[in-house]
Amino acid sequence: MKPSPFKLERYFAKHEFTAKYLLCSSDPESLSIEELLNYEPDSLEKFKKHWLGYTEARGNPELRHEVTKLYKNISNDEVLVHAGAEEVIFIFSNVVLGPEDHAIVHFPCYQSLFEVARATGADITKWETKEENNWELDIDFLKRNMRKNTKAIIFNCPHNPTGYLMKREKLQEIINIAKENNIYILSDEVYRFLEYEEKDRLPAACDLYENAVSIGVMSKSFSLPGLRIGWAATRNKRLLEEMSAFKDYTTICSSAPSEFLAVVGLRHKEKILKRNFEIISNNLKILNTFFKKHEDAFYWKMPTAGTIAFPRIKFGVNIENFCDELIKKKSLMLLPGTKYDYSDKHFRIGFGRKNMKECLLKFEEYMIENYIMKKAVTF
Figure (cartoon, rainbow, N blue to C red):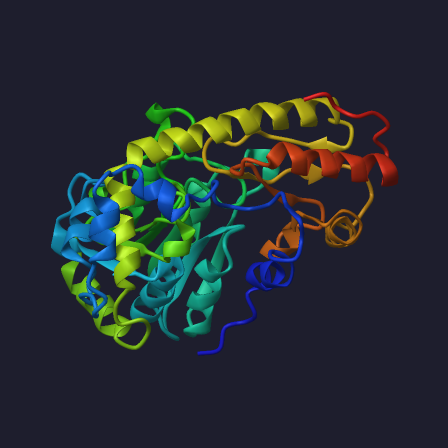
């Protein structure tokens, strides 16, 4: 297989570590090893003595046990640990899909959710959502586009890049359609637990349907992207075994230190989530003030969950050129919607970092100097 270049990741590879200000990061403020180990007084000594041999291919049993606590109907042997969420997507698509198959994919989305599937030779239908419909998934569209060879429905909720979160009733409708047609679901749930209202949190798809695979990761909700630890959770043990066998050709097993630190993070997830909510809540207040004052220049819809949103520029400029100039003149990085193959007016903004206020002031400074905004905002 030969997938097309990953536009978003190529853009980040070019700018993420050279731009001084990042205003499009998808993850909350990362923890340091010291901060993480401080949650557990004896963990430093244990970490120093941790064995650096190969780990179990399915993942450290203690880690898989902690992962099961995120679900209601998942046992240890129904979790497969991966090197981040990306590996889950790659392996699922290669195991489930091929040239004779069809998949329906939530769009816009993280490119690998459709690109890897397409690279297997499968036919892809983009389940496109639109701003004017509040990014809602259209169930009628899903029903109309089901085929005899449809093998998978792939969606992401809470959603990257819009922050959309569907209602439970809609999730159940999707589950019912999958059950009726005996097809797989791949549910990207990497922002689960970052809902602004706990009552809005969706059940994990793997808890609702035996042929659903839920993707989880330490990178987003738990602020530990450097660990590169993710997982697939599913009650379909045959599928999990096939994914495990395919994984022998990718990472085989995970990093032992990363698995140790992931266990600590999951044991103290409530403290980490509380920390992240404080950052997100404060930053959303600042963003709401900014976009309210500049509603003539931007369309802003506050998301329902997560650390990213997808505003739109109202005036006449190509968003890719706009973002490139912003990097050149202010060393400030936004992510153009073109990197999602979606729009030349939308951009992804991230609000999970502690320095967002400083970044936003730089953004405003650029707008005042180059475009239509004439006054600064007092945050």
